Length: 381
Image 1 (cartoon, rainbow, N blue to C red):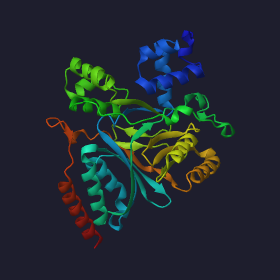
Image 2 (tube, helix red, strand yellow):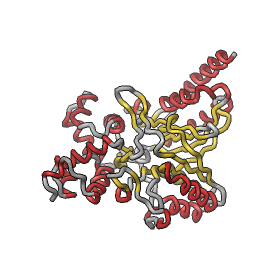
Image 3 (spheres, rainbow, N blue to C red):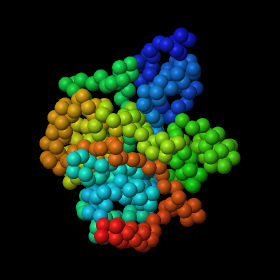
Image 4 (cartoon, rainbow, N blue to C red):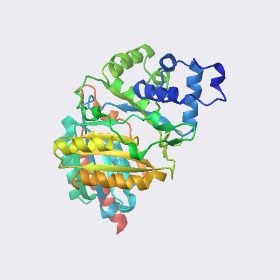
C-alpha cells in the first residue's frame, strides 16, 4: 500500500498506474474497484487520474456496434468539385444524417476516410444511397469495404513513460500477442432507446455520474441504474472505454473538437482482396506496435488506425513499407490531418422504439442532398 504522501507531490508507481489505465479501459473510472485492485488509496486514484486529464488524456466510451445491430463500413472518398471547398461541412452532414461515426482528411491528396456504423437492416439502402451521391457529383470516387468486427485497441500503458510523457518502445524488439487473431463478430443483443441514450451520454463524457445522466435524460435514477447494470453492462453494449492518449477530444462547452498538434501523426491502413493468411499476417504485423488505435476485419479486408509519435516517423515509414510488401501491395497507407477530423456519437434519433429497429429514409435523404447540390451549383455559378 502506498503511503498517504503519494497522493500529492510524489510521482506515481509506473506499474500501478499502467494497471489503473488498463482497468479504466475495461470498466471506466470505478474508483473503488481500481483502488482495491492496485492497492492504493481512493484519493490517490483520483489524483493520478486528474493528472492524466491535465496531460491531455481523455476517456471515451466505446459502443459495441455489433451488439447494437450495426456493421462497420470504411470508405475512402474524394469530394466532388462542388464540395472541394466545403468538404468538412459535407462530412458533418453525413455524420448527422447517415450513420457516419468518424471522418478524417488525408494528406497530401485531400481525400477523406469515413467510418460508418450502419444498421444491418439498412445496409443495402445505405449502400445505394452512397452510390447515388457519387452519381450526383457529391463524390468523385468511393472505395469501400464492410468489416465483420471493429475494436478500439487498449492502450499498452506499460510501454508509456508517464513521467516523461512519451512512449518507451524499442522498434528492434517487436513482438505480437498470438491471441490477436482470435477476434470474432458479436451477435446482436436486445436494447432499447433508454440504453442508447445512456451510451450517448457516456460517449460525450465518460466521467459523468449516472445520477447526472438521469437528470440530463429526465429518467428516474433507479430505472437508469437498472438499465446500465442489466443491459449496458449485462449485455455488453459497451466494448469498454478508450484511453485517448493522443490528446484529441470534444469540448462540450465550445461544441468543437480539440486537437493537440505536432505530437502525433495518424495513419490509416486499408487492405482489401486479402486471403486469410495475408489478413492474419497483417494483424500480427500491426499488433507489434503499441501505437495502434483502432482495427477491424472483414472476410477479405483489414483496416487499422495507427498513431505514430512524430519523432519516430522515420521508423514508421519503414514499418508501413513492410505492411505494403506483406499485403502484396493490397494495402494503402493514408496520412491523416487531425485538424480536419471528427467523431460522432450514436445517432439515437434514428432508432424507432415501437418497431425496435433503426430507420433510414433513403428517398428523403436523396431529396435533401439534391437540393444541396443545386444550391452549391448556383453558388458556383
